[in-house]
Length: 172
Image (cartoon, rainbow, N blue to C red):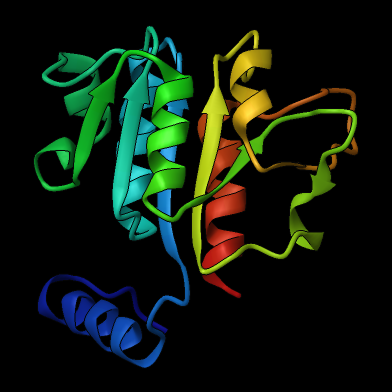
């Protein structure tokens, strides 16, 4: 076993993508994700998971931003993204575009992320690092999913939680 680098790595990734085309059109909405390092991580994650659109809203910082660019490895230059101040309007616009909108949030009626039936066109919503997705934004989402926690912590970092759910959907 040897690690892949250079041309071999590029061929490996290309061949895998050709053999396993994605079954879902995925978008992501960041509702007031405050810390630029998390936003940068999400740009890199969204690129890796093949997200078609990233929507930044509320107080979420936007590129160009030194931390977003460094952590995100400048994926903001190649990934389609836009800023919309009002997250509720952003959700309504995504729904008008045919997306089923799912909050990654702990709610009283959230389903475990692995038990939810994600439609072919899904947008995941993640919220502020401390406060989560607001009640107003949750009210216009179609559903919510959560990640079961087995330790003492009650939740994961926002970009880690998003990664768990995005890559789960990619394997469906």
